Image (cartoon, rainbow, N blue to C red; front, top):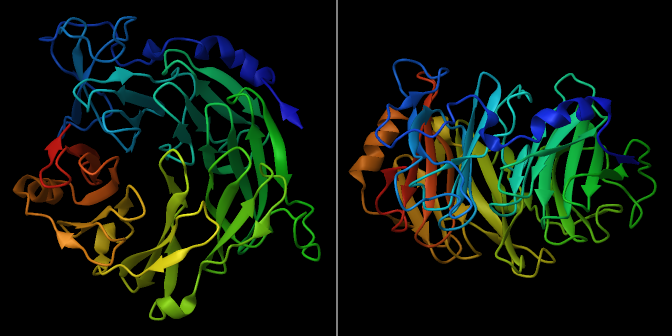
Length: 432
């Protein structure tokens, strides 16, 4: 089946083919000395994160050499994604409107690349589920049906200056989104069939998101027909998916509380279980397990890892499975880290390759260069410790290189957040 711009989508198309500057956050360029514009959704007690926003230009899209056209906004950020050492996106919701920003100069300046405010979002979009970018020019945003009759997919190929729209007449929850190139992408939608089971439908696009076709659906799954011709079974909940090229991909499923991998080598039509990664004997004390999505590193996408959390009471200790051959084989790494407790026990370590990574436990940042066999505590950064007291919930930690990393922290009671950056490998941090 192929779906492209049904009637509802066409009705929105004219609105969505606007510049990213169409959302209502004050987009007329003001002098650099102009008053800071505060997001109306921010509580008075916290003015929100201050970002220096610039209008796109043909000469230099993100960071003009002079201050003309710059203005400041204050907003609450709910998620981010580093795209390179200098490039990244960050976003939040204001009155159900998505506010999405792009930086290409290490956060000094940002461009508002938000889609039209006509598309409302019932919840904060999550990267790898509702938002995905392959590079600063090519990105996709999914508006979950949330009780409506269709899924809306927005896609840009010009860095958010314009957003095109496509829609899929299905109302199931979107559970994962992934692109291996600006053209090839997949989206998993799911519906709970019974306790521990879900109907799974995989959609695929080969033209950058304009047309989506059904690649796999398990509504007619026959457990007696295992092997090369099988869809992913009903049993288990989808955690995430990742394709290392247009044909070879993996889906992580939580089955009966345990993580399990499924793989395809034909673009998502046929799936087989494995390779087997989970070994309960290596995680004996655990009461339950928290699996993260598979992540590949670098352009070759041969190295990758899967975080596995061992939950015991109110604490979680993370370990990992690593691959160096594109997911053919996996090696278990028992991280020499203490367990995390309380608010941030679900925060996973962040790796940039199969050897080097960071983990935040409490207010201490640890660093490893040997796949987690040994971790060294970073020198105490008083600025980071003070920020963690003000914003105790750690939303996300990500590094893009041995030196550059971002950290999003929040205070749910105050409905506020701060995005921090390090450029020295985690030794010191500053608010972007």
